[in-house]
Structure formats: structure tokens, C-alpha cells
Image (cartoon, rainbow over all chains, first blue to last red; front, side, top):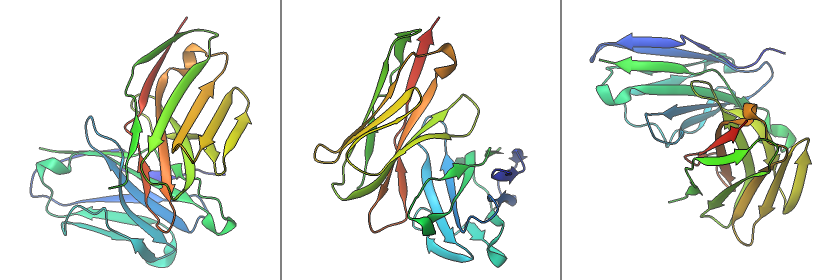
Length: 115
Length: 111
């Protein structure tokens, strides 16, 4: 069974540019999460999808961040325009929670550097 | 503000010893608890989940949960140098979808 995949693995962009990160969850996992880890800090929740619906986006920093999950499969996270403080590692995780279990499995992450 | 607290370490143990990692959380009404291992430059890897009070064992790992004390721990028996990593405690709170991560404890196992 394939794990969570993320693309790209690294992205270096200039301030003001746009970047789109992609996450493909484990097949059959309805729940998809985005997290971010900035240097020296703990992993922070950004938002949560169940299928194509946003269940909780309280962790999104501001309106420069837009997440979508059309069709309930893969998800994208767009940052537009990027700022220096957006640099960090963006993780995606998926889970299958209808069973009553909430284990999340992480993708390899996308390291975003804004210069 | 829901919080998850971990000692940042580093915790250093000799090979073959028991490593004990601890985590406290702020919200009494918490549902699910997880331990992740993260090697430098890699993503978190789930190693244990625990949902009810008591101990849960899986191979060399034992998770312990005490909801009354708001405390969860991870014991690693017969520690190996390959166990050297950062261990993250994560708590999912009842009534929400958010999982809160601690900052992690760095573990070094000396050969």
C-alpha cells in the first residue's frame, strides 16, 4: 500500500511569488490534514478535510493560504503571495477515522524556502 | 489554549537501557494520544497510539496513559542506537479535529 506522497519535496521561491503544494493521501483515507513546522518550533495544525469538505481550518495563518481538495482525493495548498515567514516544512497526513481510530500517517513533507 | 508539553532533552541513555519519554497535556477532556518518531530531516513516523488508561505494549515500546494526571509516557526497552531520534507526543482533543503536537524530546542512545 502506497503511503502519503507530497510534491514537490523542496521549493525555493522569492517573496511575492506563488507556490502550490500537493498531497496525495493513502488510498481510501477520507481524512486529510495539513501541518507546518517552522524552524525550531513544534508541528502546527493548519487544516483538516473530510473528503472534499473543510472540517477545521482554524490553523490557517491568513488569507494568503488556500487549501482545496476537489473530488475528495488529492489536496493542494497554495500560498499567494508568499512571505518570508512562510518558510518551513509543510506536512500532509491522512487517516481513516470512520473506524473510530485516529492514527494519522504523514507524508515526507515539502520544504518551502521563501527568499 | 490547549497545550502539549515535553522535555526537549536531549535524553541520553546507553545501549540496552530503558528510555523513558514523558508528555503532559492541558485539557482533561482528551481523546487520543500518539507517539511519533522523527529522524532528522524526515517526516514523523507513527509508532504508538493509546486511547484508554493503562499500558499498551508493542514490541520494545510501551505507551502509558494516565488521564487523571493528564500524563502520557513512552518506554523504549533495550534501546538501540537506531532509536536515536526526536519523539513527538500528539494529543487529539475530544469534540474537535485538531491534533496538537508537543515540541518533541531528542533521544540519544550511546553505543
